Every structure is written in C-alpha cells, then in structure tokens.
Length: 477
Image 1 (cartoon, rainbow, N blue to C red):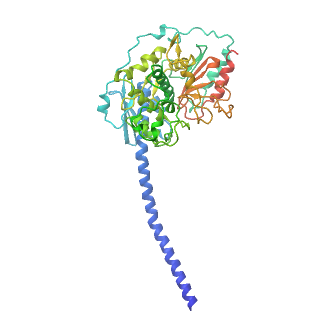
Image 2: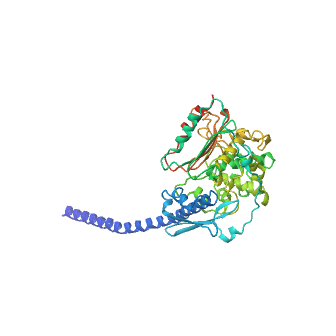
C-alpha cells in the first residue's frame, strides 16, 4: 500500500513537472519572440543610419568630386548587398545626396566647392552650410603646358631594356576582370618617367578617384611637415586634453602614427562598430575616437585603427589657426608637387577626415608616391624633413609580420621570419599606401618604381603580388 502511494505521488510530480515545462514553453516562446524583435529593432536602429549615410556620402563624393553620373555610382559603388537595399539620389538644386532604407533612416550629404562632400551628423544642415573655410590659393597653372612630373606633358617612352610589349600586356590583363574587380586606373612610373598608363571606360587622367585609407599616408605627410617646422615632436604625449590625466597620458604622437596607441578599437565594417559609427554617425571624428579606453600598454601592440588617424587630424587642427588649417596642407606641400586635383573632405565639425576621405587623379597619387621615392625632396626643394621617409618605413613594434610603419604598409617581413611578407615576390624595401576596395600607391626604391592602382573591387581582387612581380620582370635588369 505504501509502495502504491509512492508511485502515485511520483506520477503526480512528473505530471506537475510536465505541466510546468509546457506552461514555461507557452510563456517563453512568445517572450523570446518579443525579445528577438526588440533586439532586431535595436540593431536596425544602429545599422540603418550607417547604411544610408555611407550611400549618401559616397554618392555625393563620386558625383560632385569625381564627376560621375549618379546612375553609374548606384550601379557600381552602391549595387552590392546590403547597400542595394537603400534608395539613393542626387539633388542638383542644392548639391546634395540623400539616402534611406525603405524610407527609414534618411541621411543627407552636402557638397561644398573645394572641400568635397560632408555627411550631416549630429548637427543641422543649416549649421553645416553656415561654416566658412578659407580655400587654398588657386595656383593658376596649366599643367598641360608643363613637363611631367610637375605638369602633364610626357615624352616618348625612353627606358632602355624595358620589355614594353610584356608591360602593356600586364596592364591589359589587369583590366580583364570579373565584374566585381573593376580596375579603373593603373599608372607605372619608372626612373621618374611614366612608362604605362591605362584607364577603364568612363575614367581618364583627369578623373578624381577616392583614395580611402591612402588618405592616412597623406596625413603622414602633413605630420612630417609639422615636424619639419618644429611644431610636433613624435616622442611627446599626444595633445589631447582628455588624456592629460589618467592612463592615456602616456600615448605619444608616434604611438598614434604607428597605430600602437593601446586604445581599444573595433575596426570592423560589416555592421555597427566604433569605425562605422565614427565615419557615418559622429560630428567630430577625432573627438569620438579619442574617447576610446586604453586596452594595452602604449607602444606594445599594433592594431589597425582609422580612429587614431582622425585623432591625429584633430591634433593638426588644434595646432593650426583657422585659415591656415585649410590652406596649409595644399600650399606648403601638395600643390608644390603638382597635386592640384587633390580634395580632402572634412567631417561635420570641419576637421579633415585624415583616415579615409581624399580624392585625386591617378597622376596625382603617383606624384605623391614620387615625393616619398625621392626621400621627401621635390625638384631640389626638401618638403619633408630629412629622415622622415626612413621613420615612416621603419616597422612598428607588435606588427606580427613587420607590415606597418607610420601610416604606410611595409614589405619587410618580421625579424623572426623575413620571408613572411605580404608580397613575397616583391623586394623587401617595397612600401605602400593602401585603401579599401583596391587602392594602392606602391613604392619600390631599389627599382626606382612607383605603381598606382585604383579600383572598386568587391570580389576576386587582382593578385597584387603577381602583378608587381610581372611588372618588375618587364623592367630593365
């Protein structure tokens, strides 16, 4: 009898337990669904303004600065998922571009002559349009009447020992690509002479093209000019007010240039991150990035960060007066090498986006490469301090393959394994400016060579190691 009661009690407990599980599931499933919806809405609230902002900003720049048709940009730059979910358009009446995703998260970018396009972020359009910048002086020079490299007049190719047939085929092959590669410009300069130049349909030597993160190397040059004038010392603590007290006070300008600041940073572009929020949602990018907390000891580890480049841009602006800031980089540096097409774009606060936003022609990107190939000297005038190129191309501590200097990428390999290089077929003295979607200015001092490659690659990229190897093989031995 006692055993029977125990069995009955046991079954009752199981039954109650079963009822509890079923009841729990009935409550939990709708609750999980609601939580999932809340999380999805929260993610979209963060992600959609980035998506529409990216599209509006790039449509504006490609059309207003690059002088392309809106449809061409929509069919190329904005055609891949998830950008193709957006609706983007140009308004010629006020020189702007807008973007939205199914009518949500509408964003707008405006064009200002000489300063390109700026995305309206954490401010009003009226306040943005009320900003006044002092433009650099118009050099009033017709480059088509002046010999290369300061001008555009080129002589008949005279490079003894060059295999011109092989070189032309290499360049042609780089333009024979699947739709996702989109090579748009290639320029090869050997011993100061243009020996190969080709453009995709719709582009030519006058077409300004986005450099993306090659802009970081332009920032390197501006810092070098400030060092030359004694305004900056690389070993000094970075001039950031918020860092004067606390653990970030030990971060130096050199740490920022080498991306070894120790600041915690998320350089991801697949969704909302510090990098995308900075570029597409913040008013003052340098202030946004400077708010990052210290994660590692400054100088110990390399971590690629567009945030550090914009902190440097902030420091440059703080070290300049209002008029000088917008004129100086052009008049003291870039115009002196004939880089007249260059447009550096500011954020909503008016500070140049030193990490990412600069447009120039392929020839002007080549001129920039030549400045570094010539150790910062241009036609007899030293524009960058002596030793600056050596500094810029010295490997950063903590870069696992010795692949980064000071805002330039390096091919040195690591001290432990010099063969572990990014481009094993190229010389170890190769260094380059590098940008998103296949923008490169390759500089090889030992071969007196600069190679510019501009593209809009979203898949199946050009094998740059083989590309460079083939070019080197065609040059005189």
